[in-house]
Length: 106
Image (cartoon, rainbow, N blue to C red; front, side, top):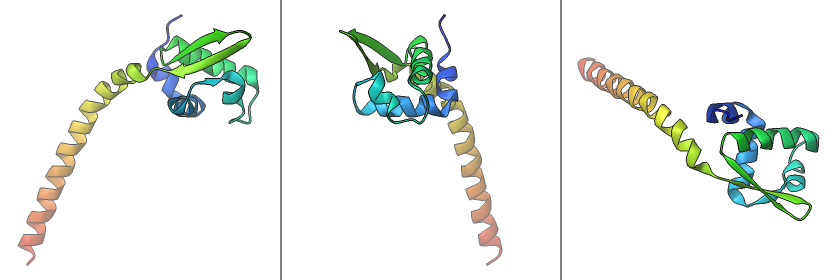
């Protein structure tokens, strides 16, 4: 099942896992050491991240190593750009209004 990237970033633990993996590739045990939840729970989070295309898991012997691929987050960035533009326009307009009010009150 292919999941949506928004499902991956909806959970704070998955966001934290992504953050950890941006620093270096880690095996599942190393990832699990950063959390106070079980290793099977971490495996479920990693599975969702893998299904979303944000994490790749490579098996080396008995170990599974996780690495991050942030290209899928471009989808989120593109979605957010509309809202950034909207709020920037609104804040610019507010600044103009406040400047005009300040000038009128002098």
